[in-house]
Amino acid sequence: MRDFGAGLRFLFDGQRWVARHGRWWGFGMIPALIALVGYVAALVALVVYAGDLAAWATPFADGWSEVWRNAVRVVVAVAAVGAGGLLAVLTFTAVTLLIGEPFYESLSAKVEATEGGGPPEPDVPLWRELWVAARDSLAVLLRAVGFGLVLFLCGFIPVLGQTVVPVLAVCVSGYYLTVELTGTPLQKRGLAQRERLRLLRSRLPMTLGFGTGLTLLFLVPGLTVLAMPGAVAGATLLAREVAPYEPEGSAGGADEGDGGQPDRDQGPGPYPYSEPYADPYRKHPGANPYAVDPQIG
Image 1 (spheres, helix red, strand yellow):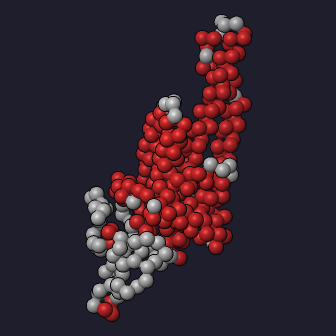
Image 2: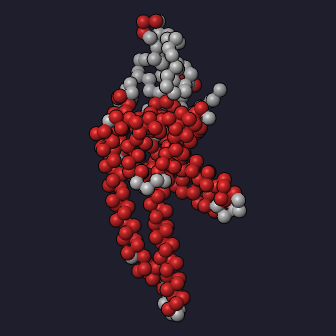
Image 3: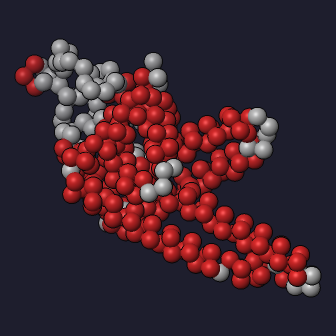
């Protein structure tokens, strides 16, 4: 529960960060607004042409009586609009992050700078960054959709489908939402997607605390756009916790005036594991401890 609460705290700390930096809050909303306008236009077009789409999809009903033909096509049209709305919900965050890659990268870098510094900008072309982001987002989306379909079918199970399944759905959505949002700061730390997934699974309570809180927040109409900049900031803070950045030449934050030994008399930080060496992933500076399954003591 301690890690779960820490994840929630990162979520609200991210919102507080953008509240203190209003210019970056407005800057971070631009991609979400662009995506929102595009989705609204697409859904309006789908509603307007739902009847034509239903008629095109049901040519076998042309010879039926008017009552049955209209009934079938109304059902198909409603199903098409519902499927479009569901697809919009599932893909909105991924599309927003893809559109906003340059925006959110700058926002994440600013958060890193104000919190003590982070990895340098990668020396790769923008098109390559966008390609990697799109590829990783698609992989995450396919995983999330797969779990979503399984949970949808489980929803028809009596009792469990109305109690346990909705909770699992929020947890799965929260996990993959956190994977998406922490992608940029963790990728800057040299972690491939498989390593990022492994790392977040190793800190699952913290990941779920952040992600489920954000998922529930995004269920409120309009808050997705308003909360997205803070979500990116909070995800960057979470990434700093689970994968602390050690500059080259540093000895895990050691005091150079003390023979390279860390100051163990420091007080605890604002988050769990922030005191020296309390995080098991800081025990091996200079190596990449995420290349294999993290070992939790």
